[in-house]
Length: 313
Image (tube, rainbow, N blue to C red):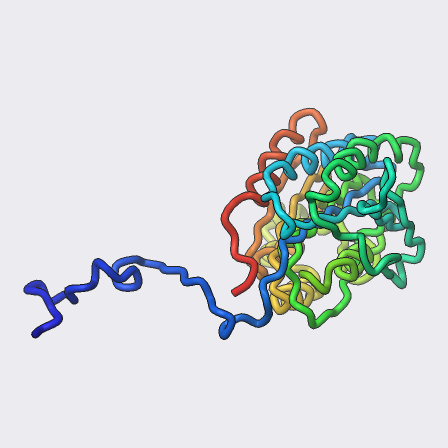
């Protein structure tokens, strides 16, 4: 008996997806898994520096997150955590049995640590009310904040696989010093044992520390005006640090999306190396407006966390 039809095709081709579909996904068995599937963890890190408060960026971030968590799947496998930062980092114990979450401050951003080993990331079903209350109160809590610096984050090296949804909202609209990558370190310390998808909301050019960049805008305009053959270099990364960082993220199976809510030059050519290397994308809001952009910010955030996704290959 011939297994081919009169047209030369296998007779069972239409019954086997791998033979009649362009792409096919199979559920991996334990033999093909690095480890047991981890819970989906969502960690929100929000900038509460003076500029973020005054421009309404903090309020926009809190509102977007509060609305977006309603699209997260229910169940014990959905876990969340939250932290805020200016020149220091503030973690919140959402599991504490009180009317308001306990704030835990980490003042030393040069040597970041997590103040608790547990209860920084808890199931959404156990903390939804506290989380919504905290998101609503954060803009008022830091309403009089005079700290202009923003401890954005320092990348630490970890060998663990990362499967955490990590939201960073960095919104600073001047050229004051920022401590590059310290908050990233704090976020990784909080979730390195569970691991996901890193979403960075950034508004300023990193200007101090590892990965700091200088404004190439004026130089680039001058080169373009005189027809300089070197002008094309503006489309290339200015610092290899971001490529190194992106490779480390990829090795840890972290996909990075960057939301640029900016009113100034932020060197997208350099910063976009991270999402392009890790399979993410860049969202660009320029010039950011607290009146018109929050709705778009929420829609982008909602779609990003609710769309079909693969956390590990």
